Structure formats: structure tokens, C-alpha cells
Length: 446
Ligand SMILES: Cc1cc2nc3c(=O)[nH]c(=O)nc-3n(C[C@H](O)[C@H](O)[C@H](O)COP(=O)(O)OP(=O)(O)OC[C@H]3O[C@@H](n4cnc5c(N)ncnc54)[C@H](O)[C@@H]3O)c2cc1C
Image 1 (cartoon, protein in one colour):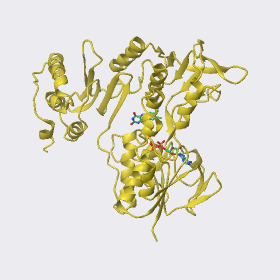
Image 2 (cartoon, helix red, strand yellow):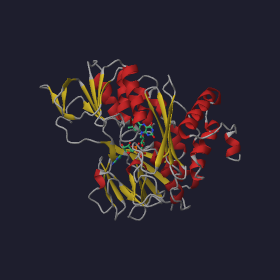
Image 3 (tube, helix red, strand yellow):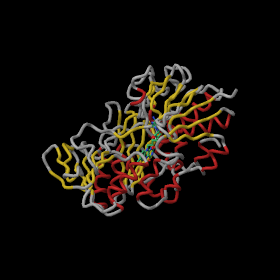
């Protein structure tokens, strides 16, 4: 009899696992997920509110895909799991048994016990239900929204509300926007962009104290820790996310902040795996990576990896070097390798910015060996394959700068920046580097 693989969570991690298993086997596959019946792209939620996409445009697969690939979908909540009996109890009173189980339950927005955090008009931005709630909370128009938490989801929410011309006050605890991740030089660029170009009322070094409501328990204002009262009809709580694993906490599954897994995404219980935002490595297979990584592409990679293992090719998770990308209103951001907000003692930095446009790069390298450590770019798109290769080859900052042209996606546009970047570096570090014009394919030995 064919094995039954059950996956809880139909996000990018769970669906990638299902697809990979189907590619290699005829196992019975069931996905249980509560939020929506069909997989959708969470990263595109903002574009639905902004009117650029319809919900159905965010769903990569037609309903027939699941039938054709014999992937059974159950839209329900898993309430509890009896791991000894391999049985999952669902909210609708039925249950499902499995041979192998993949937990891919994602994240949930953080709440820090603020007074008023559960009032009407106060919400996070994570799920499709949150998007619908945002529509509901703003359908009559609002005079002001307050967003709490200066990270990537907070700035997306600011952009969404701004697109409908709602005034936004954005409270950021750090001195600068995303100040625990971005170096000050780059954080300041975003702050200026938000204030000058989008008129966001950005208040750095400011924390929420409490949220006030009217007699109908609907938000009317907030107060900051320094005592400032701000009238508003919507409060967005976007102070990060945590693994969505509360229903698994009082079981014999080993958890910390997330579900603990080894390099094969295997938990402490046989035939039970965890992937995506909810997984936490006991020890990450790549020593310089974080044990929990809540980004789209890592969810996908974990899904593909566990899919291979379950289909009989035992495969360890090998994500390569850290990279990420995002958009801050109009500014595109990419990062390769590690750039921290604070420079470490052995590191040197090079920051170059365009005199007028929101284009800049921030590079970090080792002072003694000149080994390249990481780069953040604003407004420039660089090739992932090359940076991954250069990080593996432990190239120097000098080599990277001389070959930067090869990594560029848009050579015509980029040509002018390169000379300027290299000149600035030569001046600052007293070097004599020059632009080398090699194609990226020749560097990768295609
Ligand atoms: C607004 C927003 C924008 C983002 N933008 C980016 C971006 O630009 N780039 C990027 O890399 N990342 C981005 N992210 C993060 C990225 O979307 C996540 O890392 C990724 O979606 C996580 O995928 P996942 O499969 O692990 O979990 P999820 O996508 O969270 O899927 C988990 C699913 O499991 C379901 N579930 C949980 N518990 C149960 C249960 N007990 N029973 C049944 N179902 C359950 C949930 O309802 C959910 O549908 C963004 C996130 C948000 C919220």
C-alpha cells in the first residue's frame, strides 16, 4: 500500500514539499491548511490592497492542478496531534492519520501584551484574513493609521495605506528604520525617502505605550511611551513574526522558538519533519546562517529538500550563502553575504551613494585579508549566481569591485555607476582598481 504523506500548511514550504514528493513518487499526499483552500503568494498580499492584482492572480496553480497531481486539499485547522498514533485531530471533529508528517505552519504576528492590542481596528498583516480585515477596517475611510514596528511588513503596510491616501504615522523603536538590520547610512536613505517622497509621519526612537478605544471597543487613539497621544482609526501591529506552533507546545515534539530540526529537517520524532518559517535548526548546516529564517526562498528550499528525503533520496538542507531582497516604497534592496547594522572590529566598510538618486551600495570586507564579506545595494540589481560563487571562492573586495560590472543585470544603465564606484573606492583606500569587462557567463564557466 502506498504511503500517506500529510502536510500541515499550504504555504510555499508545504506546497514545495508536496510538488517534490509528487515528482518522485505516487504516495498519497494530503495538505491540511486553514487559511485558504489554495496556495497563494503571501508576498503579493500588498498588491491586492493596492489594486495591482486580484486574489486569484496570486495563486500560481489552477484548482485543476491539485486534482491532476492527486494532491488532496483539506481546508481545516489541525487542533492537536497524537504522534504515537500518527493521528491529527481537526477542528471539524474528523481526524487524519499519516505515515510521514510535514509541519509547515508558518508564522504569526508578534503581540507584546500592549493595552488595547485586541481592540477593533487593531490588526497585524500576515494572512489573507488580515487583508480582508484591513479592507473592512478602512472601507469607510480613515483619518490616520498608526503602524507599530519598523520592519519589512510595517513598511509594506505603510505603502498600502499610502496608496489609498490615508495619512500614516509609523512608530519605530530603533533610532533608524530597520536599524537592527541596516547600517545607519542606508537606513537614513529610507527614512528620508519615506518622509520627503511619501509624507509618512515617521517617528523613530518611539514606542507604543497603549491603545485607546470608544464605547464600541473601536480604536480612537494611541499613546507613545513619551506621552504623545495620536488620534487614529487603525493600528497596524507589525513588530515581527514568530513560529506558529502554539498547538504543538505541550506535546513530546521538541520545540524552542520554532520546531527543532536537524539538517534533514527531521524533528525529534520519527517520520515527522518541519520546514519553512516554523522550523528552527538545532545547528544550522551552514554555520553563518540563522537557525530560524522567515523568508520565502528558504521555505521553498526546505520544502524541496524534505520532498527528496521523503521520496527516498536522503538530502541535507544546503542553502548556500545568505541573500535576500525587498522593496522600500520605490527603493529596491538586495543583500548578499552578511552586512550587519554595526561593523565588527575586524571589518572595514565602503559606502558609495549616487549624488542625486536613491542608488547606493554598502560593502563590508575583512581589514586584514581584504576578503569580501557582504554587500547591500539600493537601486541596483546584481546577479545572485555570481555573488554566491564569489562568496564561496572567498574573493577579495578588490576582485569584486573590479568585476562588479559582470554582476550587473542592466549593464547599459549601470556603466556610469561603476566608474564612479571604483573611483570612490580608489580614493578612499588608496588603490588603483579598474573595471574589468567580463561576461557573467564566462565567470561562471558556462
Ligand atoms: C505581508 C508579508 C510580506 C512578505 N514579503 C516577503 C518578501 O517580499 N520576501 C520574502 O522572502 N518573504 C516575505 N515574507 C515572508 C514569507 O511570506 C514567509 O517567509 C513565507 O510565506 C513562509 O512560508 P511557510 O510556507 O513557512 O508558511 P505560511 O506561508 O505562513 O503558511 C503556513 C500555512 O499553515 C497554516 N496553518 C498554520 N497552523 C495550522 C494548523 N494548526 N492547522 C491548519 N493550518 C495551519 C496557516 O494558516 C498558513 O496558511 C512576507 C510575509 C508577509 C506576511
